[in-house]
Image (cartoon, rainbow, N blue to C red; front, side, top):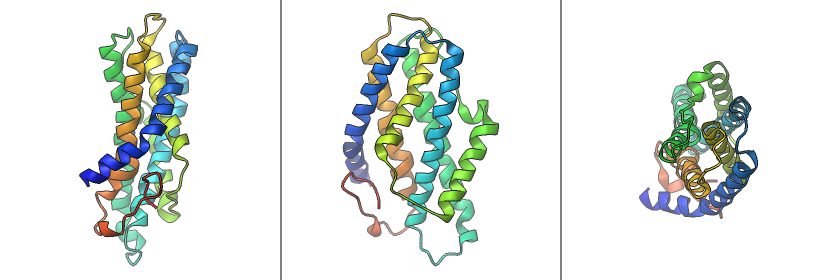
Length: 213
């Protein structure tokens, strides 16, 4: 599993590098954006990210679970895996790592916006619906570039909220934290995390980009 984690991180680093670069460009364009506008954009991108993450996490686990099992017998396990993989790791990616970066970069309005608590009425139902859809119709092939960009931009607008009108932003620091915020959590939530619960790991295979089929 350790070797697989290393391979996944290597395979996804080009996507993440590109995403982080687009994030820095957007930071240059939108720096000084009003906090309320950045907050609204974050709460469009973050739900979209965790919904996609829930679908991928659930689909990959279901793909490698024996089809002979009755669906209702494994539903609660699938629900738990999909929810923790999407909400837990998605929150780490979009909120906690950016908040860590905001604190170290001394941004004036650093604050961790925890989506599934702040807007529980929106995010939690959407994630559950996404898990149910993927449970009955699992599809593991999603555009990874699109997922990386969603995650990157959600993290970015979390940092824009914290930056205020600070013109002394360290763009290199923003780049580093955007890269970390997407690189490790996305691989964990979509690929490594659901595969931890697959009993027969000998059936797991990779596509050309290192993603399960």
